[in-house]
Amino acid sequence: MFKSSFILLVVLLFNAASIGAQVPKELPSTKMGTVNAGSLLTQFTNAIKPTSFTDQWANGKSSWLSSASKIATAPGMIENISSLSKFIKPSMFRSGFSAQSLLQTATKAKSMADAAGLLKKLEGGLKPEAMVSGWSGERNTWLSALNLLK
Image (cartoon, rainbow, N blue to C red; front, side):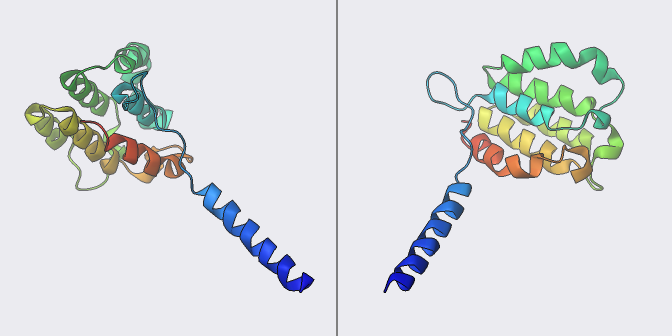
């Protein structure tokens, strides 16, 4: 009786530990409880390896990050995504992905949901080696938060 209770306790503790490990990190939010577009964009940008950027990024990084962190509108988000794509080395894009196509899509984007789709397209167009090693563990939570942009 004691042995079976002990085994049951061990199984329950193991299950509780594995369930707790699957709880996502807190989503970026504003004071009003909505997802913050600027923080999602900067989180993504910080997940790109520094070696994946062109030499021009070193000159524009600080002002770009400052601008991106203050995004409050869909046009601002779209503009920052478009400019970010120009700072990424062409060799860091997957074969078949066109940065020019992304920029054309950006001209048609109007809403924050469109901007989120544009950012997903950019993220999906990057080769895995363009991203820092920890991105794969953060990506699903980031995508879930991005889906909340409206």
